[in-house]
Amino acid sequence: MTTLDIQTESKQYQVFVEEGVRNDIRSFLTNHFPALTRILIITDETVSKLHLEKLLAALDPLKPLVFTAPGGENAKTFEVYYDALSTALESRLDRKSVILSLGGGAVGDLAGFVAATYMRGIPFIQIPTTILAHDSAIGGKTAINHPLGKNMIGAFYQPEAVFYDLDFLKTLPPQEVRSGFAEVIKHALIFDPDFYDWLHANIADLNKISMEQLSQCLIKGIMIKNEFVSRDEREQGVRAYLNFGHTLGHAIEAEMGYGNFTHGESVMIGMVFALKLSIERAGLVFKLEEFVDLITRLGYISEVPASLSHEKLLKKMKQDKKSVGESVRFVLLEKVGEPIVQTISDSVLLEKLKDY
Image (cartoon, rainbow, N blue to C red):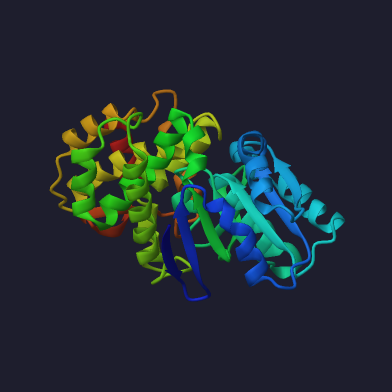
């Protein structure tokens, strides 16, 4: 088993990565929470069918309660958040209770925000079931969506631990594999040129990636995420670099309709756009055509869908929580591994979107 230490200003915790690591959760609960009263598992409809019984078997004889949210971003609404809180209240969870988040990034965001706000905060544990969640489960960002913006209502709230069972990844459909692997590529671009070169040389087909390669990529991605989170827990500085590709990516995801276009596929388009801006505005020397060839082979789209309005995308970008005074701030690269933040004017963005 690989154990990674995550250090933030508010909390230190560990990430456990291994096939079958769910079988260690029960002992962790009994050792770390000797006065444990109740356990609430928050999951979604898709994950529940695939993995809930496996987790319940691993927790036996503990008898957790279960709240099942809708799948995908539909889990992150005010209504679902309210229903989850109602379940916690009706089940008499208290400050000695623990929430277990079983699912991908959306479930983790929901469960973490429920934990952060229930009785002003109770412990929770992340149990990711997607590749994407190697990023979202680390660092304590929790949130729900608002019609005017993604992740606009939330809190920074760190988990007690993350149990990353690689067995759960074996059921992912190709689209979800692509979605999660976009964040792996992002981590390489913003921090580690050697890792990017390794990806370029070794990953040619996501349908044929071995579990050993995937594990190596996820562990590396978690280590890179920790490099930023440990220095800037609440995104006042360098943690913003983790948003590379996300400014346009979130806008595309919202305009396409949550669930119709995956997070990672949207972010990949945003990364290509940010790389073009980086070459033009930050002096980045980068073989963009080779990058587009790579991601195309991996099954990604590299262009903004033609059906989307550039003006509406700009409006969504200006509503992004990373914007300041309605100025759109982009994470760009001066070099691979050397990100910066630059404010881009509306006129330039509209011109570049038209060119794109």
